[in-house]
Image (cartoon, rainbow, N blue to C red):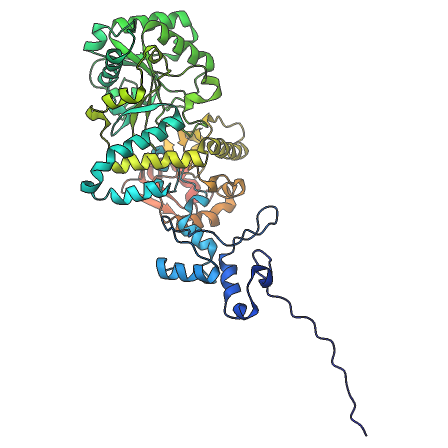
Length: 534
């Protein structure tokens, strides 16, 4: 009997290996089957960037994520070997592209630290890696002997970037913005008078030259600290020196009264008036009418106008706060800058009363001014400021500040309906009664807490930002605590530095100072009873 032949069922074609991140097959990716067996597809999957919002594959990163590394590689395995050999990082199932980004690109994360070094940091990116030139100079600056010949050129490049982004020209640099004295401003004005091509009328008076002074509007930072301490009720400072003039902002609502006051100041030897477009003590925003009245009265009376932009620069949605649309009809004479930028004094050549001077070639005038020792600056500070400006211009941080501020303000208004929010864009003022229960680190003032968030991409993702608030935020906060690798020791209730004695709340990931624990029962009770993050 012949053998019975049985037919084999048709075999299903083998499913082609596919990347689970970008959903492309090995064939499309150019990975041969024998290379799939050797791990090429697995390596690709661990470093794949996935899909963009339109569903288009993003492929592998085109550059090493480690700051300062200029190596390029072709293919996933080449990148795996690079990270292991150069950066001692093993790409694995537990350490993929996501972990690489968390290690090297912390700016992709949100952050509930809204203190940011009292506003001194605009980003978690390193300004020293803003460009290859700045990075190279930063490495060289560790040797002062070899870097000294380059320092002057670095200062000029910084000045050029500053002028291009902000519109003002830096004249002098300082350790703190409050170090800038009336004598320096009087010296600048005298210098311009002496070097003007055409004679100018309305030169500074003998009293302004002999004993120059500043006046200040009430409630601003310059009125409370350092050599510019112009008075006020802040119990952490003591005014020293001559009794200064503190001006009520109500004066700016009556142009004639303001002009009369400014004339009397000029006669008394006052050379300039200092103001802020967003008042640092309470977040009050200057009105357009007040701004224009102050500028016009300064122009007509012989008083120079200084705007303190140490905190408002970039955060308020424009390079300088006074460059917001409602203030653009006038420019101040001088500007104080600081915080994220090395503190200093800048001049607007077309600003109030400065526009009278015909100085010819500005480069020549600046070269003459630079013989003065006030331009000396620490190399690291110069490079940090320069890098900050490069990043801010390239990534459009003023626009980002508007978006970050909008997201946070929306969240706060939803959590605390009717809350009185002040400030502008990403400079947010919150009543202390609300900030004490918001479980976020801020920067304290007597009646308002300032939120000064990082202007990083992570703060632009509304879903991520919202995940930091409310009862479900515990998991993200724990992740941020571990990933960011640092927690500022500021009290999460009062936003003051927690000094030596503090407790740590494992759920909200914040420190609690001994004062809040011992004296403010209601705020601390929320944490002890587990009602925080609610």
